Image (cartoon, rainbow, N blue to C red):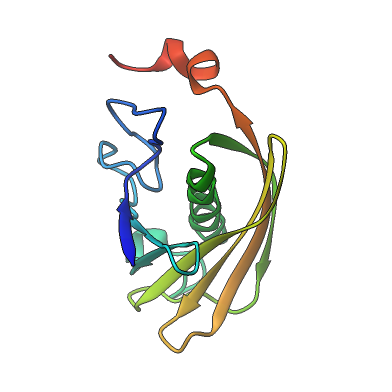
Length: 154
C-alpha cells in the first residue's frame, strides 16, 4: 500500500510552511518532489523528471542536484520513527549520467538505527530499473523546536 508523505512533518511535528528546496511546496524556486511510502517495502519513493534548469553535463543532471535528491529521499526515511533527523554525512556513487527530461524515480530506505543515529540509503533509477546513482547517509535525530523554533513562521 502506498501513502503520500508531505514535506518535513511527522506525527509530532507539523510546520506551517515548508520552504525545503527539494520537497517544499512553499518554495517557488524548489523542485517540489512528492514522496510516497511503500508500506510493504518500507521504502519512500518519488517519481520525477528533471528539466533543463538542472543541467550539469549537456543533456544530463548536475551532480549537486543528484546529491540533493538522494539526501531528501534518505531524509524521508526517518519518518518511519516519527523523528526529524539532520544529515551528518553522506556519500554518493555516481554510477551513470542522470538524464534530463526522462522518467526517473528515487527510492530511500533504512539500513539501521542506533539511538539517535539513523543510517539510510537511496538510489536514483531510470525507467529500465538501472541504478544511476546511489547514496548512504548518517542522520542524527534532533528536537526541531529547540534547533529551529526561532526561525519558524507562525
